[in-house]
Length: 144
Image (cartoon, rainbow, N blue to C red; front, side, top):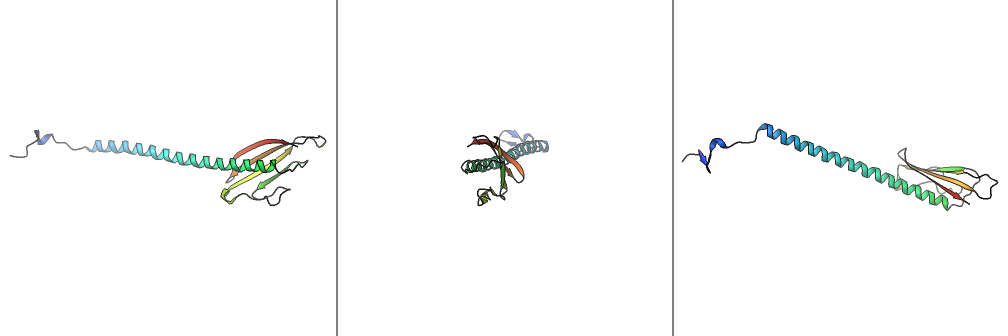
């Protein structure tokens, strides 16, 4: 018995994978891998942007509440920037928590009523930046 027949097939019927088939399979695998890696990078960047925006919104809301409860009703417009300059009514309020490294907060109050009015109306604007780029800007109004 020779090795001409194996399980009913002739030796000449055996065939391996050609170079073309291998290259096509590798190309398909490379395209799928590139798409998955690209999607992963987009997901990571989106998560980073969302985290930055959420932190900025938290800082902005904190400053809005701080101003709202400050009882500072100056008849003129005023502003301060954190970290750095403190508001005129609270010299100790000149920084932001260390966990917000890279962020800066600018708070501006614009007087909208005249000094002769019995009710003072102010527009409060809080702008939060991260590494020099503005992330969020919130306006609100308050009256005395």
